[in-house]
Length: 146
Image 1: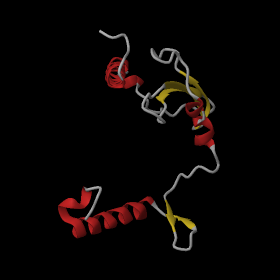
Image 2 (image 1 turned 180 degrees about the vertical axis):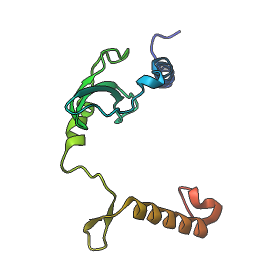
Image 3 (image 1 turned 90 degrees about the vertical axis):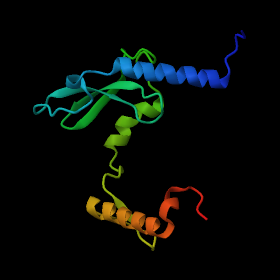
């Protein structure tokens, strides 16, 4: 057998390792990633995972008053040993940014943007999806429409 790994073999092995790790590392419900409101001024440490790529590096976040103070890689993570990439570490800046969009926005015909409610956004998407279904029927989900 050759010592070299093929790309296919590497991907299969990687997928198996990630799936196995996720199954083993699944915490009980009392320690799940959910956020618990701390008392005033109390700093809460909570676990989470990075959403930016398929690795899903785990981290520990220090939270006070609903705001993330700091983020560190989870040293108990078998694969990363507590390391995180710069993209994952940027979560604190992204979440706390004053420029972060936290409400639905509608792009007007003149190029401007305006805030809309979640109800408006959901209704707009539903209306457009119904129109596509009526126009294309069973083929509405196809990527290449006739």
